[in-house]
Length: 325
Image 1 (spheres, rainbow, N blue to C red):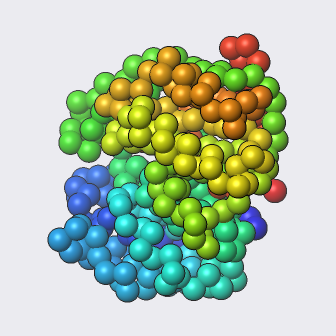
Image 2 (tube, rainbow, N blue to C red):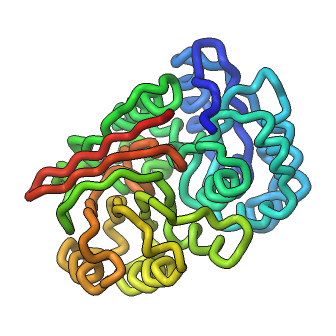
């Protein structure tokens, strides 16, 4: 189920289903709002978007209220999660999935929001978007690739290609917007050759794994698995989280794998990643492309969770094409 495309004049609602928006600096909020307005959108906020507790989140009831209200409001056409965090999965059994099924909208976020992306797709079939948070739109410099990919994904239903960016960064931009370091992007890494077509399922690996064994875990049948992790992960934790996912019965039907670019503090090397993938007999013969622009680095591509994609990896050449119908 594909929500209506965003267009000029549409209202985008910002909600905080994980961490509260209150931790964003006022200047970052202003940049994000002005950027979205500059694209022709109207921006509104859930009434509890700034509510917070000792965990810099808010109550389940407050977050559910904003989520339901955003989907029920006929004026709202798109929903952006304000921030990532750790506890979006608290909401899953309290969500009225009929509201989402009957009011499909563009819903976008990454990191901890993976729990909602996965649950929405499993329970309703709604294609959501693993892409920029509202806070991401507060990035002052180096945002062009992120913005272009977001627009491609949510404003038209034409196929698009996810190409590597020219440069990338994983510095703490929110601490000092003028002290940024961008380095040249090395391009994609072809870990295993091949070609495959399937359904994009994935996001933040450790968050996706929280859904295992629950009614909210999407099927891996015919999946193009796309996975990434943040700087709290390193080679050993990434390996065991991946292995855990591959133990699922339907993992045998995975068609291909995309792996997001790792942050520097994860200390993941290309050699270590190749060794990890080579050790997974479950992935033998599948095309696997790494160093893709999604997840916890900038800039990031917007990946539609539940859409169809074709990936091709031969020699050093890798291509990722996304269909949205």
